[in-house]
Image (cartoon, rainbow, N blue to C red):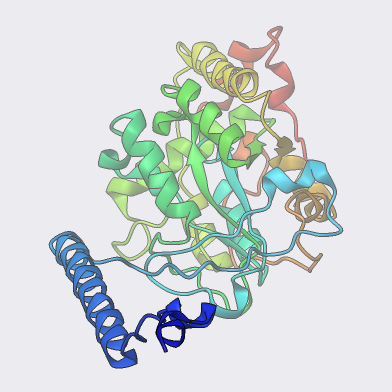
Length: 344
């Protein structure tokens, strides 16, 4: 029997550990997950709180840029897609716009020329915006005004029913243009603005027009109203009835001054894209207006103006002291001004 008590198999000494309760493990995992969730939520709430104290984030909608395919690379700097602040261009948003400026001197046909351009359904020229003194007081004011104009935010009566393809202004050389030419030339080149120079060959005719217009500012021959431009032959005849007397003592100096202004303007703006026109040439051959439309890259149209020319007669019949003027200009570089240069 003792042997029986002392006999044990090998398996008798293997003691298996008790199994862990699955419920306990689940509780541990759940507790750990809760702690991690609370920690993560607290961090998120802190980040949201810090962001809410700053400016609210804005969502910017990126507009698709307008296509400029099939365009000569040299033309791209002169194509613009303005975004006015005061209105939406709507279906015209991707219609390219050319910027231009008519650079001229008073009584050189610039008013008549501008009405021709404005008769085109795609061209808008805004007149002498720098005739207002405050707009030309300094270079910064000039550039700010130009920015407003070329962004199509300048108030104008030249409204169009079609998309604007060319927008500009009429700018006299003595309206801050020559005084601030360095800043303006740089602006023209940076913004891709084309210059249209319009001059008058016969400066003596220009002088007659200047003197007559200056006289009418006080005389107001048209029923007490002063008009620089007229739309009827009768009004033109009334204004042309006045024959100015020209000061022959200062005549040569005045003609030189106007020539000098034009020469300086051409020299200052020679590095810009430009075209040079003369009033007399357009009068004699209005097909030149096609060259202007090609220059602005707009469809060719028949351009028209309601303005009527005032001084049509030979100069000898329009100047009170014509014999004195003849003597003053004979043998000078300006003698050719005494002769007729075109016929109406």
